[in-house]
Length: 298
Length: 199
Image (tube, rainbow over all chains, first blue to last red):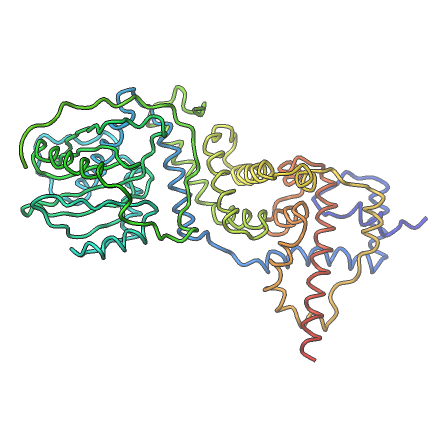
């Protein structure tokens, strides 16, 4: 009895490689040899497969999407780095800023501090972030506060208060990537010495934020870092000024921020650029205790 | 917070090597994974990016489960598909993708009804296929679209796709056939419309 076309096609297609020999399979092959329609069917199936791969042009992942993906991956990787209790919370934030400066020093800045110690292994996430920073080169060089405010509104999804640091001149702003977060750096010059004011999203859970301004300090490669939280953001001042002087500036900035009633810069980023990172679970950080009040004038 | 078991007992240097191996594997297949994500999500870029990101993070956490480097590509695509499936909101949508819907006699009857390929007139409109192919593909049901993409575009064997999707090989064959049939019919309709508009 002649095999039906449907049965023959079912046995012979898909052509997924050698099949166990059987009488029915042999009959199907014999049917194929005699049936033009079935041979046409097999040819059509092969052609459709070839057509599909030909009609789909290779498409590279958009660079911005690629960077977001690797940023999330870097953040995930950082979650699994072994952490001692003392490195959580603020200390981690201050060290993150300091390590970024340390990496920049290794890659091009003059190494002048004789007591500086290289990390035994390069912080790869910070290197990747610096690379991203270099690619984007998003910055503005101006002393006009309104221009800076407008630029900030177009580049970061959070409100930024621009403090007036006594005796200094603001010189511009730039975007930074630290610990897989996008933030902003306001650049000042104080008596000819650069001062960077970092503003980053605050990653602490809502309930863990301290009620009082608390400061953490760190020194790396001759640069002082003073960090604190306020207005839902994390802040830090970085400079080669003496540590006590920088701490006084930080306290002044924090006090002014605390008296600011409303955000001074409204976010005008398009909705598709305000993309919340994927949430990952974090264990509660160690509560930050306030340091003794610093003495000394500016 | 769950820490990946692959980190337990590993030195920092070995963790770094593992991370490098993962990024190397990912970089090799990232563009293909992105394209597949797009098609799984019916062309919606934001959804595709979210899907891919979640899949990559899951793959990173479970990198120790990859037994052979040679299986890395199918392993990544399997995770992508499973992540997509987990993201489907309704039981109906999951069933659309997962159901073992093969009815052998109906399948054979459908195979028998296959019409011959393009007429010369339709072949002349083939250039339109390039533009319309992805649009038509995105209109297919997810279950058919995914099989077409994995077999015809990515070149996975049907056995591999059956393992990825957790269905029988016959189901893959059935969906492949129905997907190709619908794809071809839709493209032919497009070609005929274009021919009619030119007259």
